[in-house]
Image 1 (tube, rainbow, N blue to C red):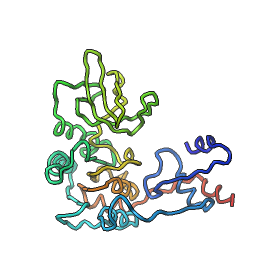
Image 2 (tube, rainbow, N blue to C red):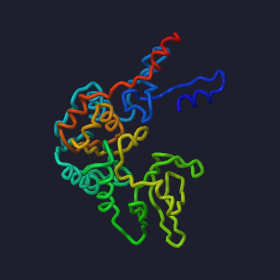
Image 3 (cartoon, rainbow, N blue to C red):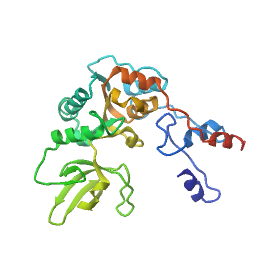
Image 4 (tube, rainbow, N blue to C red):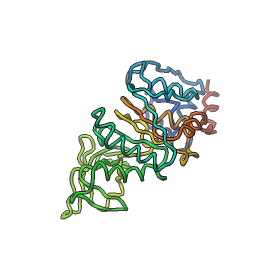
Length: 289
């Protein structure tokens, strides 16, 4: 992708890369931004002032602690924007997440479950994974009505929160875009959904391009931000736990972050770094100066 981007630039053009090198690396091969910065071949400026939250925000303070390999401050407080609820078993974690999203946070703080609250987890599978949580949250937040369709093992009803998982230039909807189902027409075998200001119609046979999005993975959330993030964290996700993963999840939240899960899993994640990807890009760029 970076190769194609550079090839598309006209002669004499300037390229400005903006990103957070401490977040998860790309899904594909390499770690381009980290290698470009580490090569010392290009000018680098690190932005240090946070505008999304106040400097005293516990989200910001704990994000810095996590990025430094330190455990976040989990002290229980009545007020604030960072909370930790301890639970060990995936089923218990899932129950607490569903209660937080569907009842506790909306009632106490006024956030709308589907619009304002995003559940972000390490993986799709497992008792507290995104798939299981989507089913549970759908049942609680948007229970079945007569306006729904079942396809590819999933039920989509009017009011459901969905994510588009492929790039579709014709519809101007892209991988990771969030929307809400606005209509189900069985006579035409069509579903309509609103993605921001763009309303799109899908044949029932095209619904594999959608998935429920009350919960999604941290990887899918990169580049996005949400008023409220709820992060389920269990030892079932042991192989995926890492500092970059947790740091990415924490920094998606603007107003409130709630971690639900295992203190041990959180400790492992904070201490463990992603293994370095050896692409030799850093070394090749360094030779240019």
